[in-house]
Image (cartoon, rainbow over all chains, first blue to last red; front, side, top):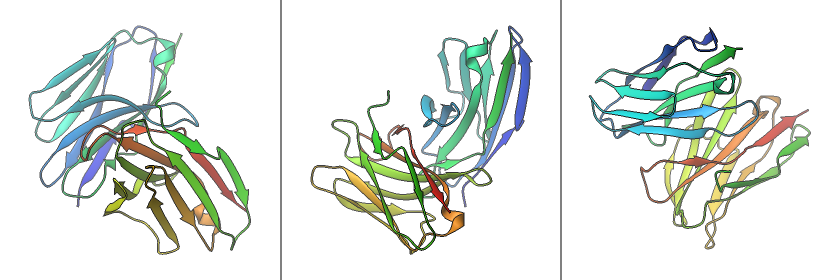
Length: 109
Length: 112
């Protein structure tokens, strides 16, 4: 059974304080690892797809990396508008995406 | 705006009732997915359709069913509703199988 564990559950940072979110996974045959951002009451918004260990993707202040067992979402010099829940999901042996429960990120001005 | 449209946005209904949630995928997307999101369970995959055919099933209850029509829109039918069915229901679409999925804004279902 595919499993995704995200940590921490919640993170509060000051504006400009860089940090990393973790996504650990177990999957039979990884077809893709996805990062999404979700604002309260809204649908998840696609950020990145990573396919193989060593791959990295960047978008503005976000950078996603992938190893064989985990992925990190690095946030550099975050701004209050980066506050959201960040979801990690894998596509592997199970049908559909298997999501973690997310990291609730708050960036204080 | 992801291009995926879900209606209605909010739905309040009584236990034992039946409701239908509707999803219009992005233009050109052939694959539609349904997910349920509750506070304690996170996002759970329910079912996937590809070009009108059921492709995969996840943790979907027998009281729930779905279909994808020739124009590619999809409907999720929930019957004999229980209090525990209260959740956000999301539809997502992708161009082909196993490609990145774009999510709609969801339907918030409240069963009272």
